[in-house]
Length: 119
Image (cartoon, rainbow, N blue to C red; front, side):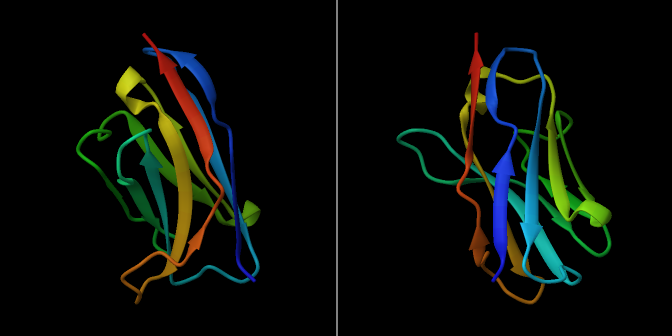
């Protein structure tokens, strides 16, 4: 059973930084893609970033490009989202998710961690 657990959310002032962690377990994750998504109150879920577990290749939403960095530590089975230069519009619940690289949808989701950026 795949488990996905996020941590690291909190409150920060605009311009500040946070690092989110996503611990995954239950199988080996070679050939998996790990994603970060966010959802603000009253809005739909939004793609933030993805990383290929095996190759380490990454992709970002335009809204976070240059400010957020996704990485993974295979030895810890953990994915990170380093968030810098945070803006109030980055406030949302952030979710980590996993899918096999051949799937089109993310099958495994964490419970989310809240990020609040004050102006």
